[in-house]
Image (cartoon, rainbow, N blue to C red; front, top):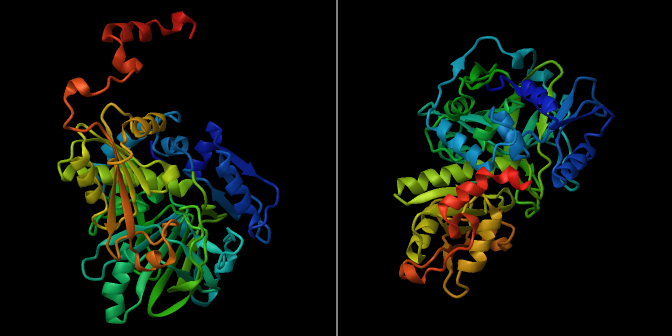
Length: 476
């Protein structure tokens, strides 16, 4: 069953042993984030900080919502020990059955309301996440809700937002993001502010959907309902017509100004590096803050993977890429984006490979904006979710001379947050992608293809079945 809110999910993590409640006082200024970062790097549990310096009892910070696949499984109502492949399969199956949200009139996120001059962002325990950051980032594990003024399409995305002052936020949505395109193509030319809501502490599947790459016109709320297998409850904002998840912990309502900017960044971003200094960001004037009593502020102490960002982005990116390849009639078996690869690397399994197939796959994946710049293609005998098998295929099948296909990316298509690109490449969003052929050449006769020496391939089927059936009798 889905969780109606973040609190139900936290209780489930508590029961499964996947949560630690930190009761001692912890400073919002770097300490909470430093503890969280260390826990990520030791593959530890989610953390609920229950005693925040300078804040009243009841104000809490939660880090690590879906920082492991185990916690993703719990969020989806699967067995905690479900395999990555099982999680992918469940996600893909559910995603194909969107569920429309329902609108409610009363909501937990309205228990407390600040309006106008009463608005004060500093009343919330926004953390200072990294030393050297431009400020306190209140929006890291968030949902940014916006709406197309012409079509009424409501978009959810995950973008960072920093406190600028008591009643202003500043963020930097990437130029190719839906939020930036909506702002620059619709609101700025009209000289109108863009209504926006920062949703903090919704249920984990809503946040996961906000990281996904759905198309213009697709309502993420429908797909969140699909993953939850239950409609998302939405409620209207106090100062705009935007609809937000009713059971959220905190909702910050505001407007992005069409003619004003403010300094934003630096920030230690999701690839695990800080690559950019301060720059001009989108300025949001806050008009209202609504929140639950004893609110929980969700955070990601972003950095070297694996963390919530890398797990969520890896899962949603892989599903999106698989969907796109199937639309192009590629004989894809599965797609995996290892979280450690921060969506710069994907593994694609195919029924039939070869250099031409590898090039076609790579060009499809990088045709729009190239978040991914390394694509490895493997044969169908490789479990793409098993990095041991993937590395073996790369080491044994990829020809050092002809197995690497370098593809130049046009200006504006490369990912500006790729650390390996130089400053000019990041500025112009240009670079290169590598397509790695770890499949057998299609021109080889079958008799020349080496026989894989594994349990699944080199022993008779009958013997495999006997060994598996009698496994425990061997004392194993």
